[in-house]
Length: 385
Image: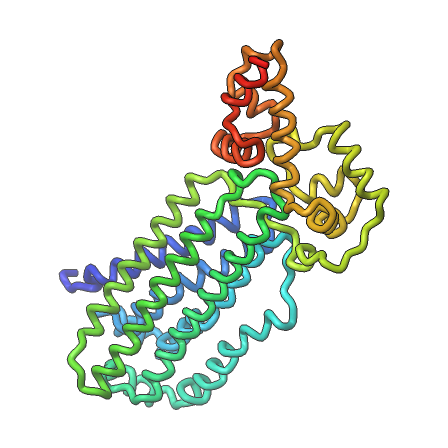
């Protein structure tokens, strides 16, 4: 009973496994209206549980021998998570920023590296006789692996960074489209996605350095403590997963996202003059801009127009993006309120709210940009005259 099974480094891996598995289970069980993004996130979290399990089985002080007594096949089975986490993170990012996102055949090509790995590992390891696998693993150490094995690890880590970069590109593209679909940007919460993608991108870049350090040390003779570097990455992963859990608990929901990439590309959609007149009449009579949270899709449903057509009219006819289009109407409404002597008792916060704004900063910035003076100065000038 006094034999040490887990040291501190092993416990870090076990806690990471527990947190990721628990997070995935809660997400799958608690959420009743699951979207495609939730399934991708569950899959990604399970890969983050499988990766430290792979490390624990292969490099744990005593745990590796416990696993060996169970089955030598455990040594490579969890390694597939390295090849699956990148596509799952990319699909999760896309499903989060684009409503109704569906996998295409091109998306499935991202699974090709995982398929190649499975074929390679089957012939390279799993077809070996049982006793040969046991003898090989019993004396296996990182320093004894051949260059091909270390090169495979380096390529694997580079591929994970590549998928992280693709995720960052998707977020950047989403930021460019926000102003074409939302009238209020305060409710677009990119914090969770930024923390997830940027955090794992940094950790994956560190993993590339670790893989390179192994090659330089083992095959180049350069003295680098890659073990310490690897442990640092394990601790960083635990810290990131913990931060993600606390961050998610502090948010009631994430953000809705745009509908599809194709809908944002409306350059070639034709429109009629009566559609322009219908939009102007609707904005003047119904005043939908008074809603604090108004999206392009909501306005398109009110007008009974295709989203692409409405976006095209706003961009080409009014020469504005959706954010500017809606907030110009809000500024005109706020000017009307500020000019009225009977409403002089209204505070600027009340004027802002009655005009449709839900951010004082946006209200002041947009007002000064369009009118040339602050709301307070405009009220004073209007009432004095």
